[in-house]
Amino acid sequence: MNDESQQSNPSPHRSFHPDTYAPKPDRPRKVPTKQEKAASGEGTPSESLTPRGEDRGKSRGMHDTGRRGQSRRPSGTKDASAYTGVDPDDSPAGDGSR
Image 1 (tube, one colour):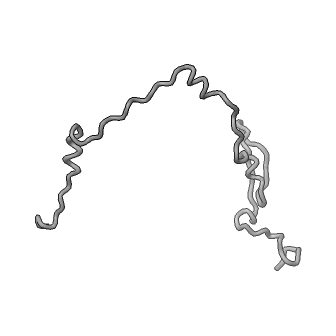
Image 2 (spheres, helix red, strand yellow):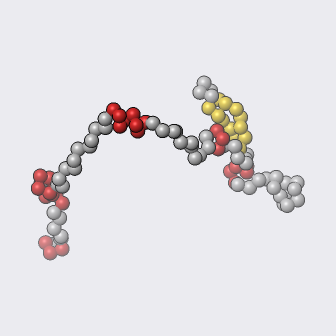
Image 3 (cartoon, one colour):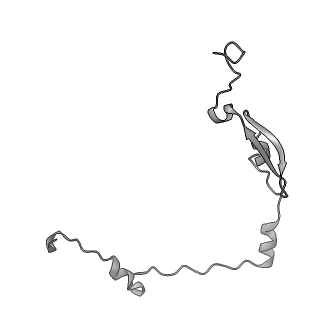
């Protein structure tokens, strides 16, 4: 490379001279009083907008197999319609055939 094709890069110089180039610090964060802390904790809790995970899994193609392990976590299995999105019993003839 020759000197004509290089562009100047002032970034390294600014990085090593923060006292000259850094912005002024913001004002420090105000520490809340005890009354402000108590007031912020008051109020009614809001309801969740989404269903619980246990309830969300009850969809077409999913089968509940009960609770599992010491933590009693919900478990389940999937059938073919859960993987493909196509219900194998949903055929025009109604008997599973095409």
